[in-house]
Length: 174
Length: 130
Image (tube, rainbow over all chains, first blue to last red; front, side):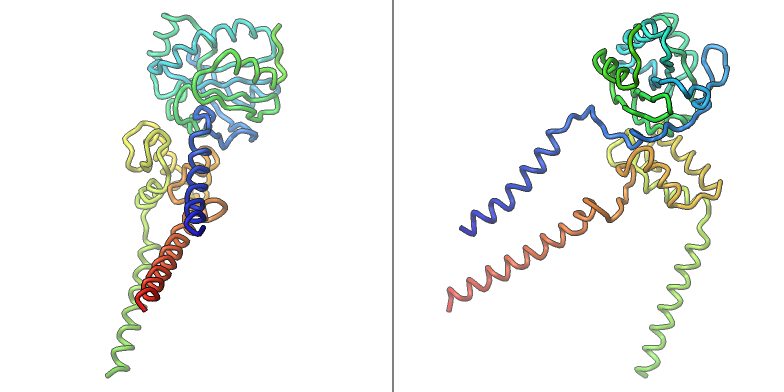
């Protein structure tokens, strides 16, 4: 009887640990920033060098995508972003892509080859990327009109995720 | 004689404590940056602190630590900055609270359980021999 008890005392916590460890979706990486106010930023546009600040974008929902030209999933995601910008361009949704660990030359070359998506912002010292807790690309933050982060997608965007999160932001397709 | 030895040991201990305290006070900004760099986990590596990581992101994080040290921020403020952004996961020395307490409590439980098991096993063996 005692042996069974000892066996169960070892087995139950072990199975529990495996269940919680393996049962989680690795794409759903917890973000410490979700449900918090998005960190402010001041970044220059690749296109013309004009400054863009989060404060200047407040009042409208924002999708902030971190990407790089050397990142395979970012290239695959590019088409989704292009369609998104095209479809929602006339709504109040704002969309910006922040270049992560990459050069403006590479970004310009990428646009020449694959077409422009969202306006690109430069983050040379990675200050904004670190402020947003970015640990790899692509990562996308959905920020509501009052500047709160409502969702973070770690990894490639999918049309389903985009639809779901835009609905949560109150953005409807025109 | 015994009194002199005790006094000598006490003085030596006080001297060591004073030296340790002086060492703490004399920590240079570079040494502080280096120490803090060992306490923050590199987000793109496996269990490596940002101070030891060659990744670009870690290098930039070290630059930010440097800037914050230069700006006069405390250790807690600097660690809190990274914790707020990357979560508690970013701290290589987790706080002893909540589920983290298991890290301290579980080894003690296992040690006590193991000791209890050995004592019970030895006693049983003795009883059988008797």
